[in-house]
Length: 158
Ligand code: FES
Image (tube, rainbow, N blue to C red; front, side, top):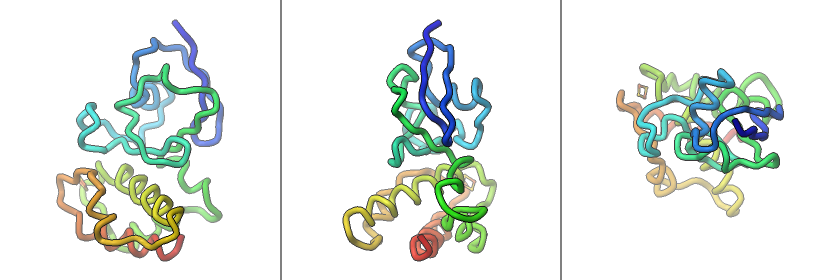
């Protein structure tokens, strides 16, 4: 089997899996990093949203062979390590707003939120309703209003 090397949550890993295995299965089944959830497996529901080199992406849609040793993957497990403190400010906002219902979609929601705020900041502006409308992560429990409120709170602390 071919070997693939990349970084996950600050640690370099090398995995021995076929080229066309998608990263979500490598994370969950090989590396036992289960924060990114399996929802649809076809890049639609966004439950697995994580960060690749700081930008939101969906590991269900990326072949492990497409990663390079310079690539840095961050999952919800590694998010807090990107800041000072025990939790990322977006996670704190999520807790204070009591956003989660069943919780299944929430790691992906938080990762999407952080990437969105960082992208908007890099453009030198604040987050707008139109930006929030672009988030495509599905929540079958319908927590969308609390998600939007928490993103506003989290953005103000980031
Ligand atoms: Fe249940 Fe979003 S909290 S799917």
